[in-house]
Image (cartoon, rainbow, N blue to C red; front, top):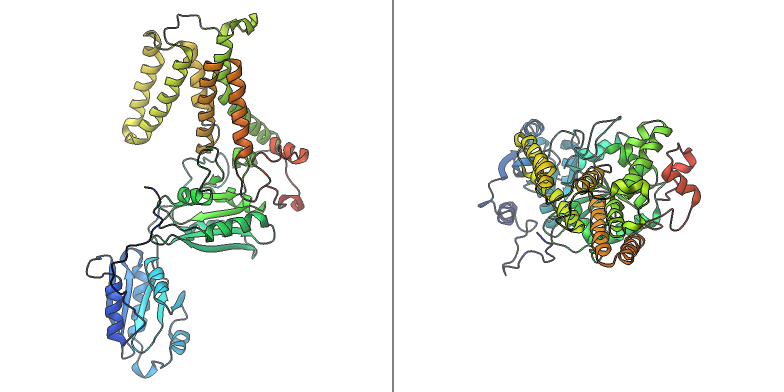
Length: 490
């Protein structure tokens, strides 16, 4: 499912032009252009409007019955004597009650029609009128499964861009809130909305985002937001750390906009991308702000410490087991008491992959079987593997902590990035002992420093470059004054 940068194949046949010739010729050109003889879901209806012939074109799946029936009933009621000769007079007199658009070129006709608008071609008028009756198939705005809410609103983004925009507009009733629409993809023509607060936006980030989106040359965004993110950073595939903060919560999106960030919303995707993003902003969670500052600070510090411990607990244990003379008497309990039949590093690596295997199995397992599968997996890995001698109980304990710690933060990309460097640390420590542990830690720090950021001050800001005041605010949840809240220093 990779990106295809080539457009549609040229068949050698001239493309029909729906803006040339008489009415009958234009209708036939539209039918040929839309392949009506093959497409079952594109509708074409012949009408008589004020004594003139007219043709209606629409995509069946986007057409709402109630509104379109009332509009068509009104059009049928137009008398021939009332039908104006000029298109502008027709638009002003008979089409003032719904969202309409005048189409004067063939590319716009195809784009608007396939986006769900109803297009009407009227005999005697060169222009084509497009009515916005569309209603995209969508689910309800339920709470996102990944971004769980402890306290606060329980609505979430869906796969339709217009309802998502409405969820943000509901929270920010300000004329400075801008939704700038872009179209990406020669075939998909995917709607991409760049959202920002005009008076607060980080202008550097906004300019960088708009420039990169406008320069994207791709056939389709097959994987919507993931395809777009890879096109924004086309040559930075080897660094696993996320470059964007993703959220499916409208309240989080609104808060980021008010802080001066740029948000990218892609049609067919329920997740919004926040730019610029640093490691500290990605680690933040909206639930911290729904509790008093003390509780929010505790939750934030716990999350950060757990993430750090999850990266280093198994490499440090391996390093201490390889150098048992470093273990003080008070920590003798971390030593493995039973016989070690499989090398410790191999046990860690097997369990790393086994945990991911169980995750994938639970995702692809029908809901009614998820609980039985979890019970069987727990019994097999928690008891039989230890008693059989494959794994030691202490190793199972450490990996159980790692498995649970991965769920303390909601960003899945960050969880896997930490996992990859934990594996690198394990391998290097097993191979080179202390030297390998130091090299692995240096690689982790280098990956964090070198991770590119669009329009921001750096991935580790405010640690690098250092800003003491902002760094304290990243660790301690405080209520910022209004004049500091939209400084745009993400």
